[in-house]
Length: 113
Length: 117
Image 1: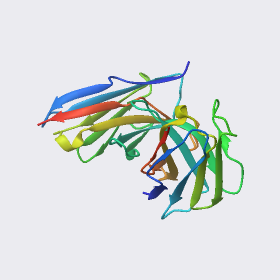
Image 2: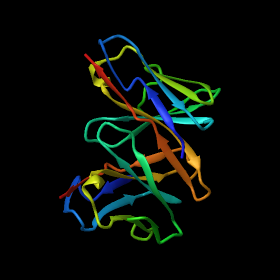
Image 3: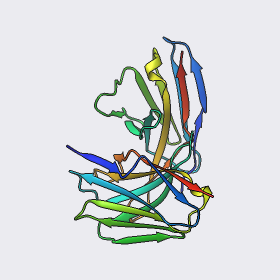
């Protein structure tokens, strides 16, 4: 069956450290994968997109990797800050033309001061 | 990106009544909008794809007669929850999808919290 999993429901890290979140999928072949941030009671906010032929993508303190062999994406936040505390969702465009996105369950990140 | 608004941000209604939720694309003409539902501590579940000028496409298991979608213009889609019941209480979020060349990015509204008593 098709499945998207994110490594843990919740992750606590100390301020200044690097947070690493994992997204694994089975029985999908997405052309690209996305990461979103969601704050409580709000809609998700787009962060990064990485294509299947890209190994790594960076944006400021964020870095995403995509391994289509392992069917896994890693999302890193370096020099984490309490303001980074939120739920992070990965998403696959399962039909590869922007018409059907499937979201992972999310990881709730807490950055402790 | 795109700016998407929703109205109302929250609504409480009695069981058996109907509720309409509006989704507006403020700076982008969207031929397609998406409606999601999110239960507490769960991820987003796509309910339907709203197509301007034509019928919506519903995901498996979503009752089209219960969740009426109307996409009357390029900037407005509405979701009407008919004969609402307590199990319909959820967070409803709409989105538009933009292509940036590399792929599609979704921009979400702020969501509508529906509570059915």
